[in-house]
Length: 227
Image 1: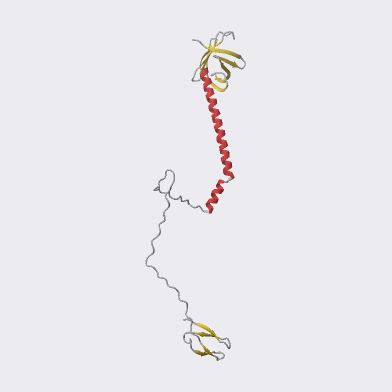
Image 2 (image 1 turned 60 degrees about the horizontal axis):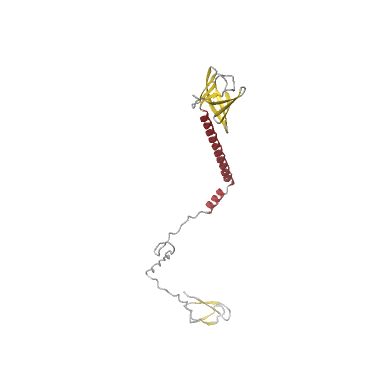
């Protein structure tokens, strides 16, 4: 229900102008002054809009066709690339792991170890190949070059299976041999005798001759034995 307020011009009392007294003469309850109550004001009308029964059709948007080298007017554009969003915590953890100095130090140390291991393995392979090549050149029968000793016979027979035979005068000795190291054209050969201490020969191969140096005995030249 609509209600207006009318102020008494004499005492200032607020009187409520309702539908029951609107347009009539009433007395002020305080000063009993006769007042003509005005008609009630009409509230502003709220505009009413019709509500449609159906919604309008949705508008379809289309992307322009790709124009360029190798693409026709009817070639469809590639679909959009959708990237999964990462939370702030995941991004922070990934950055922390990537920038961890311990991980970087560990990676550097491992790289140095792998490089050092590769160098050592390469040198070991080279040394092994040099020993095998030196052994290959030593395999065969060798006789003392005449004019170096009063011995009538001093021969060596180096076999590829590591077996060694040495003929010194009328005495024949059997043992085992292997090349322990090689430096250029010089190799060090370890001789194991069944009934004697091992000996190391310093052997130099050059121009079809074999120079053998034995500690306490001296250095002697041998040549390939001619059958």
